[in-house]
Amino acid sequence: MRHHVAFFMSILAPVVGVDRHLFYLGIVWFMGKLKFLLILSAVLIFGTVGGVLMWTNDGVTVAIDLLFYGPYSLPLGRLILYCFFLGLVFGALLCVAYVFVQSIELRRARKDAESYKQQLDHLRSLSLKDAP
Image (cartoon, rainbow, N blue to C red; front, side, top):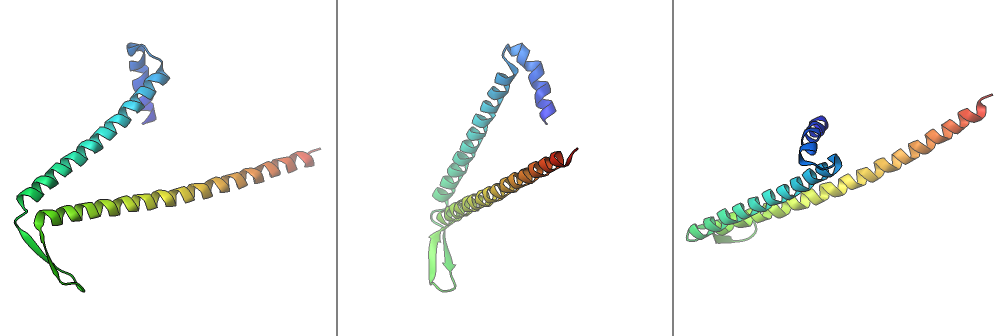
């Protein structure tokens, strides 16, 4: 993938008339903005579809009978939106937990790398001292 980007930059950077490094930073900036706009448009589309669904299915009620609590009757549109937002919150919490676990593993890997570097430096110094 990196070779394709380098090839793309080597062709377009002289045509545009900018430095290759600045051109690469411009592409990275543009892709970040594009990703943000795609996520924002997806949220707006899902919100609009959910709002229309809630508006059109507000008269249809669904009875929910839980194990310990009595039956509740909710409109179908609200039930679907509640489930959607509950899944959104649950997914966000899972992502936060995953990032937390990854940061712990990264910290452990950096600590191991530092200890291996110290061991390697110690072994290098031993071999220099033992040399004639």
